[in-house]
Length: 214
Image 1 (cartoon, rainbow, N blue to C red):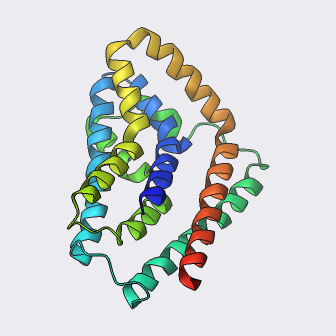
Image 2 (image 1 turned 90 degrees about the horizontal axis):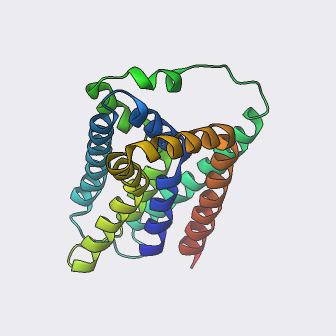
Image 3 (image 1 turned 135 degrees about the horizontal axis):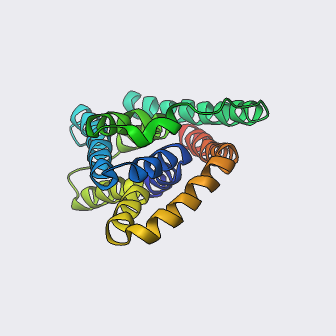
């Protein structure tokens, strides 16, 4: 479970869509406050998903080969297949001309409430679902499980926290460097999404099939 959650958390942290959107939020007027609200809303929805899973399981992992255990593995397998489909879909759509503008170009004019609403909207829910299917196996009777879950949440939010802290304590430098990051992300977004989805999809499919058949 630990390796699975760390890989999923890392994939969430480097997902180019929320990272690019967060850079735009930070560059807006009162961007530091809007970024903080974005992070709090991001964490709130993230923790809510984990809490719902743990409340359902009662903090006790299902027995191996039991219906709940098999269902969680089947869910992870389905999510992995979905990520592979998304990678191929994104690869094909990247060849088509993209319209200019859109929501991203308007993020510099959002309010605090809109920033809070965008956070859960921009979360990579396929990856969050994969994490939720993995958390089913968490055993809260061991203190180490709380450490792993905390580390998972922190890792998944680490890129946003790093940019928020950087923009707070070094605003001039951050403006330049985050602007370059935004430009790079926008020009390499499709490649990053395809690679990320392909890697994690293959891992989830392979791991789930192994656990289902072993």
